[in-house]
Image (cartoon, rainbow, N blue to C red):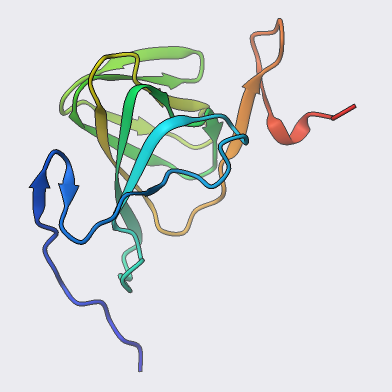
Length: 154
């Protein structure tokens, strides 16, 4: 018989942290896809036996920080709850502020960044079962993006 996760409340401690939720590394390899100054707080993310079809995570990007430039087959939603930031969707960049909502469609190149002097925080809702992101870079002197996996090391 499967053990089900117990219902619980994540008590907010202020400053976008929750009792019993430890900030985690955003991604294991900073070299792949390039990112800096991002913390991930897994709230409902299957770590305590939750069987949800979605995960809810809180990300906080420090001033000057940014997430990896990537794309993937799964969709996700971002809800801004702290500060201001920017989102790159394809070739366009949009300003974001409190309670703005971003829908990121499948295979849409995207990156969230914080060029401002205060932390930028957002909830991210994503499928529990999802594909791995494909890190992207801009080819030197070109406008198009290419997957890092397509680069040939000479």
